[in-house]
Image: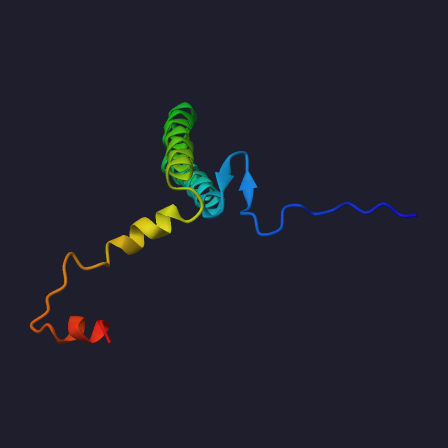
Length: 104
């Protein structure tokens, strides 16, 4: 009789070291940009030690910010926050007809 492993991660968000869903992508893009930034600084002629310090500080800030967003907003919270900007502050009606039709 064969033993099969059951996948219990169905319908759960992707999670890696505490990062959830799209934040993994944000971190990956940020790290690639830091790598490109390091290459540009090195080509321009900035001393290597200074390049490493700058990239380390920016990398630490990137990790801190991405983990903070992941814990604060969760899987879909950041998209909900961005979508909330498009909601109107108030609605203006010039007639009561809409509300009177609701009772019927």
